[in-house]
Length: 304
Image 1 (cartoon, rainbow, N blue to C red):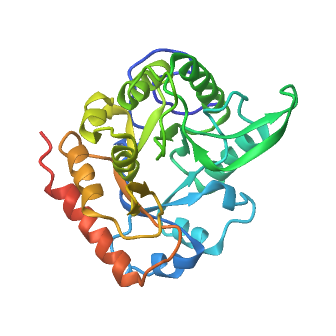
Image 2 (cartoon, rainbow, N blue to C red; image 1 turned 45 degrees about the horizontal axis):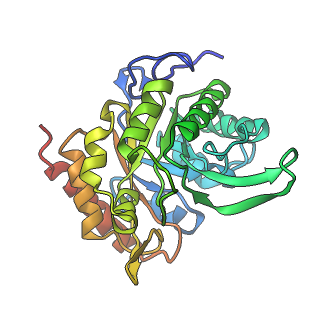
Image 3 (spheres, one colour; image 1 turned 45 degrees about the vertical axis):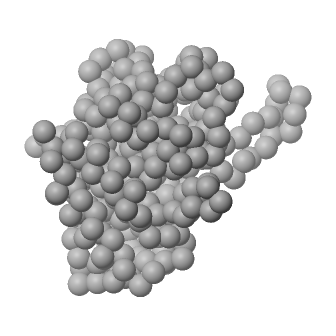
């Protein structure tokens, strides 16, 4: 399969980099997560001005029957990136070939320059384990250990080899640390990139979540990341209850999350920044204001 890939063929150690297209590295701009509930607003530049690209949940798409809204966006040149939630790249089981074929089909149908997934596991059990297969219905954190990293790297290589475009993987929000972890988040992600050449989708809201829930400093994590591998950035809202941060994607983006975005932008110019909202959708005018604040944050950060 002929494609541009970060860091060369899977399994080869090389310099990571952004996905490229004719004319140089991919530059996305400001985007928003495409959801049916806000599809009309996304299509109308007078309602939501300055939308350069969108991201759609891959599992909600059928490559042969894409939503009319996405087809219209593609027809006028808007980049659409499929975002997977069910591969379970951090699980002990190898990625399911059927899920990989579906993700690859979405990328080809959309003409996407890359696809993204999460560094997480989502299922366990099944044949050979003596336990019934269980689907978590949630993105669960991968232990930051050498053994878990070995498994993740192999699963990422399998996914890379099955996809027609480069893959970028996202850090997730978590409520807890696994026992006996021996790597920080930054070190874990840096070695993953070094060993596989995979791109990074950095969710600054998730870095903030891990700061509140796990006591981890976002700036320390950012200092360890190979930001030359950055594909794009997620920004999302959440809420704190009883000392626990809930990454709800159903609340406005908070100042602490924007501060993490500014920290990242002080270190590099992100190829793209995307606002995620999955429920309790506000009026389009409020989404437009959030997008404007995100643009201002990115433009105002002093990248050295």
